[in-house]
Length: 344
Image (cartoon, rainbow, N blue to C red; front, side, top):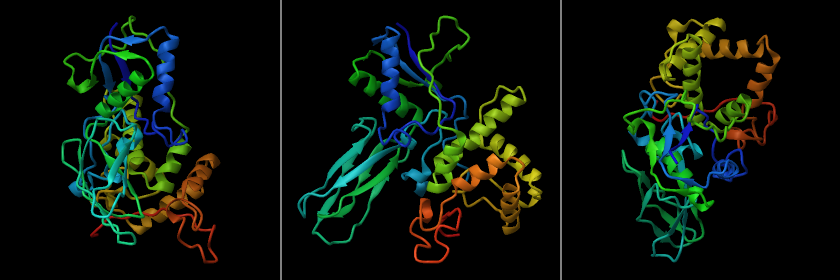
């Protein structure tokens, strides 16, 4: 009887990245935990609690044009599969529509409108993707060569509801009956009381170590992970000040600025508005970057220095530098962070 509540803490990693591509592995483990606790039927709703963060889903100054694509994914205290669905466009016969497949498990959280076309082999790929703003309708209008399938990670609206929606689908497949709906906690008039002794904790999921999270951010330029980490800093900062406030970009940036001051940086000459750098409103100087790198190189805690160095792409070998510096003397010797913002 009752509801099943998933209380998020900002972990960006639930999905397939740390489970060999098995996107719903964590959800199936939770199904096992429910069964071990003697629970095979949920008569209430599946509630996703994302209140560890505020309800601002995008960074300040982000472009609307980025909202469809993985690098502009919505931010949430409860996140799953990078807050995206992974779409494959499989060509068929030239002149006919392509076939569309998507993960996780062809979830019906999204509705796919197939306006694709298969072109003759050896044609140029012409990608076309759009998530209609404020919806989960994905319009696909790519022109794909008959010999070249295409894949893309496309964002969802309301990651919290997406999380519990796919969780519900997974529980049903695992034989756990669920009568209720997937619900965002923000839609409830009365929030859960976690001091209630009647609540039973069935499972706890721990993220990978922080160094692994930072490695994903830097090696793969994973914006969502950076934004989640920034807001987690904000939530921790509020908690350290004994304030019951959600994590936000502003509170996270206040913590970042304190670190920059310790690094000897004049923060009056710096403007930061997000965690990933996707906003063109971020303003930094070359001197600031140099001072920050010097500070990290000489960091008093060697573990911090090594974790940072290990998180950076290596020229010619991995991350966003895998295909750069390959035929040069500095292959394997350059560690650097890439970044791209259009029209700057």
